[in-house]
Amino acid sequence: MKPGRALVRWAAAVLLSCQWAVAMAQGTALGPVGPEYFGLVLNRSDARQAWPNVPFGSWRIWDAYATWPYLEPERGRWEFGALDRMVQEAQEHGVRVLLVLAHSPKWASARPAERGGYGAGLSAEPARIEDWQNYVRTVASRYKGRITEYEIWNEPSDKSHFSGDLPKMVELTCTAHRILKSIDPAIKVVSPGSAGGGKHIQYLDDFLAGGGARCIDVVAHHFYVPRFGPEEMVPLIRKVREVMQRRGVAALPLWNTETGWWIANTDGTPDHALVAKGGWRKLDADVEAGAVIQRALLLARAEGVERFYWYAWANRYGLGLVDANDKPKPATKYWRRAVEQMRGKEVRTCVLDGAAGRCELVQAGQPAQTLIWRDPTALVRREGPAGTTPSTDSVPH
Image (cartoon, rainbow, N blue to C red; front, side, top):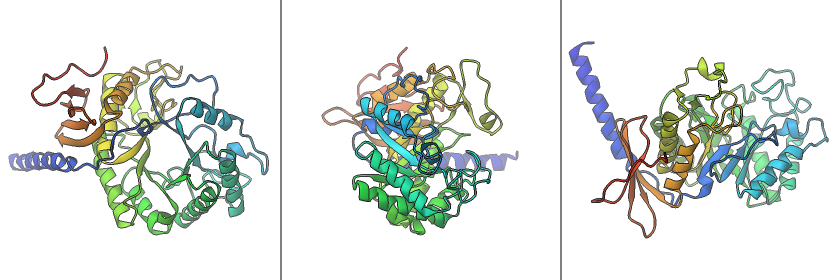
């Protein structure tokens, strides 16, 4: 590389780090962090699974065999046993439930033979809107007062998840909104959550512009950055906020209903091709993953994200916080520590300066504290108010 070009790139990198530092200091204050901010995508289809040993306040029921094809496998024949149990577990543990309404059973599918990411016909819209109406009404009536948050479909900007067109997704969302609100006005309708940047953010823009904006209470997006650290979520979050501003829904809450990283298995389970050959960045199951967890939760909150659902607690692709044998990975202790550090405090500002960063946390009646990291694999450490001695490493040994 020529010296002149190298100098230009170095200067650009320095300028970028300064811009990030200034911009991150303008984070959106949301008030104290409540338990509901810490969410998990949790598959509890197997009753023998142990309840997670980490604190969390929100549960997104997805990849748990609880979508429409499993609830109504044949027209008029309903099977609620597994979902009843999951909802009961959530109530017993004081955890809020976000249920995803999605997938057409083959008998109701507009294209029952069509291949999709979850099986033939499931990614298509229903052939008859009346069947969708009955599904939404039946589920919402059964769980009235117990489930008050519903997300419409999952990642519809990906054809393997939804093969219908955008106007059809708007119709499904607005139909569900009307029915859900008629059953319980307190229900929150969450927009379909697309994943990543580029065309996926454009899908959200088009969805809102096409009529979806009037049929939601929460804007959802999946801020996946699988090849990078959590700092790369920040520009994605800001692009989504630009869309929200442009489409007149800037005042609505923004939820990250799914994000995760590839965390190494510790039980000998082979790496899945989805991540091993998909260009994902692999994290070790301890310190490296722990650093990503802590920084992701801090940075998203500083950018005004009101919910953060980690994908997932258990996952066969290597994205889980537990191994295939249901044993928690070492990284879970850093999740617990992040909750301890953040809960009850307001994440006032975060500043990124190259590979280093710091976030200021404020709690009523207490001195402000700063959480810092020195490089992308560093664990977050806590510092007290100015003039005091920094504490030891915030992670228990």
